[in-house]
Length: 387
Image (cartoon, rainbow, N blue to C red; front, side, top):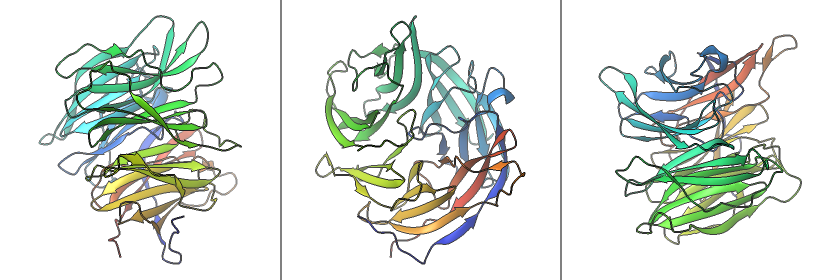
């Protein structure tokens, strides 16, 4: 077990933001990416605004002054308070896979103009659309050849059976093809399944969950796009299960050496595992924290540091590793004002969001409720040099 240091944890108080929503899925889900830094250092966040932006609830927000002020950018069309998204930034181009109000999976391409500090929606196309199928919970990745991969949950409207599927767009093409392969089991029990594509040293992989199982799928560069992905098991959560209606409470990043890092939660503890580029295999997940009420986690690469954030009840605790995940130390606690009776404040679902790759300090937002309004508070989290 990697033991955090004690007695050296610095508190960082929250700063309010103007970002609000009527949707509990304001920055959901955890395995998806909703925050990015463009090459000019600006921070951008894709927020679900709910009823505040009718017909375009998923809206891009940008800050150029470390979270003090935010400006609204394009909205993704035909989205509502239930829709979630995932994005990958390539230079000044942002590829966003999202579900829309018609239960379809879409891909939006947005381009950032650093001179004007504005975004434009260049293209919007269907990824997965089929009569009698309800699509949700997308995530996107691309490989070195430029092929795009979008994974999502598909539910058959007649049988109510859920399955985790994937569509592929070949480099230089516009058409999407749904692969025949189903990732994990299919059932009508619940929607509990999520996937996260990630680049590997010799191809592309995907961490995916189905109920209490966490699995690994991968394909190598040069394989034909219709070749089935190879599958293996990373971790099986022993009973009882944590509350996680979409099996999405995990976070994944890739470092410059090609290692893949994953954090998740199990019975209030934070677990960590990594896929080493040198061995091209997953290590056994290990416990980073004792039981502390953790339900949400977030990973960020900043310079040579791997930064792990997890809620400790309603506060967020920060752990940092300067040795690629060999060990972690607790460095900061993100704090917020008290919520006295009658105040209308509720910090009970402390979802947090950071860029997967960031400069220091790391821009961080945490969700809370005031009255009937979902809000975000902001933190600037310093990266601590390795001792």
